[in-house]
Every structure is written in structure tokens, then in C-alpha cells.
Length: 381
Image 1 (cartoon, rainbow, N blue to C red):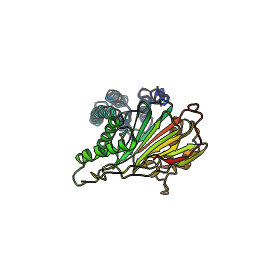
Image 2: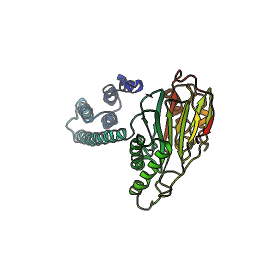
Image 3: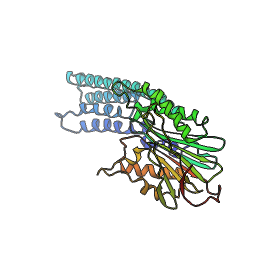
Image 4: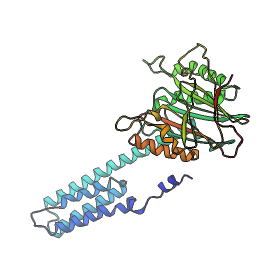
């Protein structure tokens, strides 16, 4: 169980609605007592409506109705105390307080109904989003994996960014991508590419062939998801990564996606890649995908990301310096690295991003293939 989620479910007693009931009860007692001490021409009884109004902010209709009943009773007690309980003025005050309390309870009922409907819709949306963007396993073979998704839209857990990973007989393949648009409107395109990757990754032996298969799928299907007035404007950037079991290398194919970062010994190096056009742009025209190969030693971390990370701005308009920020946590495990980056990125952006952002950290477990050579890169013939 996630520790933070576990503690979040334990509400301190002073934060519970039952504990907060002390506030309106004390208000009723204080207003009733003070009303008996002030001069006779000053009437504080109408202020009792504050008690059910405050209760409605943290409690349901039953507790709000109880406080409203106590407030009406207190108003009646004040009238009885001064011997004017059945006077027209006091009876009108009691009736008005009862009507206002009833209205407050009515709005509490409506609010609770809407809250239940929202909770049901939210649970369905979360289940749908979880089914689409499966959480990556913590480890596949010798590779440790951690992922992070920050959606720009409220109430959304995913949007236009995507990632997926699969394990083949001889390698691990990972995809990270970014479809045009953001938030809930881009989920359809993300679902299409994730499904195509999960199927095609097991059918093609090379990354260029896999990229070509994804391009064909995007060319066939993205057009059907285009809203009116946006014909020909649906595309996606994708980065495909392959980590073979037998060698100290990592292979990459970029379809217009930002290049990965290699974190090693406190430094962050941007891996130079030869990007092809984004998926859905070239149409039926064949694309020549370049396979870039670089060394990936045990203990190194490969950081994949979408442009929502590097395009996040602070209050002055400065972009987030991912390479510089990530380098200081390069020696951490993937989960810890993304934990630090999440806090740092949100702090930089003022607590909220304006575009979806995704990060995937890959690390070859120290001790696996310890005899791997030093860093270097080259192009596979």
C-alpha cells in the first residue's frame, strides 16, 4: 500500500465532521447566553441561522438538520425566557429560522446527491484511465522502471501523453509519446497508439519496423478521431527504446520526440538522435527511420520525457531545465528520481502544469552485466 495514501485515509479527529459540530453548538450557546445579557431592545436571536449555515459547509443534511433544530429550539427558549414566546414577533422569528434551516438542509441534500454522482463518474473515469494507461512494472528483467504522469486537466489522471512497456524474449521495449492536444480530448489517440504498440512490439524484430507499423496504424486510424475543422492536424511524437538482454547497448528510434537523457555519475547527457517525422504526418509516403545506438551501463539511468516537462514555465516565463535538475538526483533509483522531479517540476510551475507531462526512468540494475564497456555511441549499420 502507498504510505501517503494510507495516511490520507486516516482523518484526525479534530478534522472530522463530528468534531467540527462543536463550532455551531458553541455558537448557539453563546448567542443564546449573550442575548439574555444585552439590553432588551437588542435581539440577537436571528443570528442563530449562522449555526446551520456553518454546519452545511462540512456536514451532511442530517447533522445540518439537527443543528437547525437546536437553533430553532434556542430561539424558542429566548422567547420563553423573556415571556414573549407567543408574541407575533417571536413566532415570526422562529418560523423564519425554521424555514431558512429547512432550505439549508434542502441544498445539503442536493449537494450530497451531486457529490455522489460526481464520485461515481470519477470512479468510472479512473477505471477507464487505469485500463488504458497500465502502470509499468517496477522491474522487467535487469531493468528497473518507474513512471510518472501529470495531467494538465482537473479530474484527469491521463491525457495526451502516453507510455507503455513490454518484455520480449531477448529485450525490453518501451514507448513514450505525446499526441497533439492535451487532457481528455486526446485520450482516444493515446489509446490507439498504446494498443498498436502492445500488439506490434511482438510482431516486428527491429525498432524501425515497429515504428513503420505504428505509422501505418496512425495513418489508418487517426483521421477517424479528428474533430470537424481539424482535418489533417492529428499526429503524435513517439520515442521507441529497446534494451537487449545480451548487450550493454540501448537502441532508440525517434519519431519527432524529444531525445532521452542519460544520467550517470552526477551528470546528465542528452542522447543525440536522428528524428523522423511524427506519426500521422507523412501519410502513405515511406519513412526512413534511423536506429541510434548508445552504451547503457549498469547504474546508469535513462530518462524519457514528453515536451510538457521541458516546456513548463515558472512565473518569469523560464523553461524547466530538466537536464540540470535531474543531474543532481542521477544516482537515485528510478522511483526516487521521479519523486524528486515531480516535486521540483510542480514547484517550478507554481503547482500546476499547462500541458500534460510524462516521465519514464529506466535503470539497469547494478551488478547486472558489470563488465559492460564505458560510454560511447554509434549508429547501427
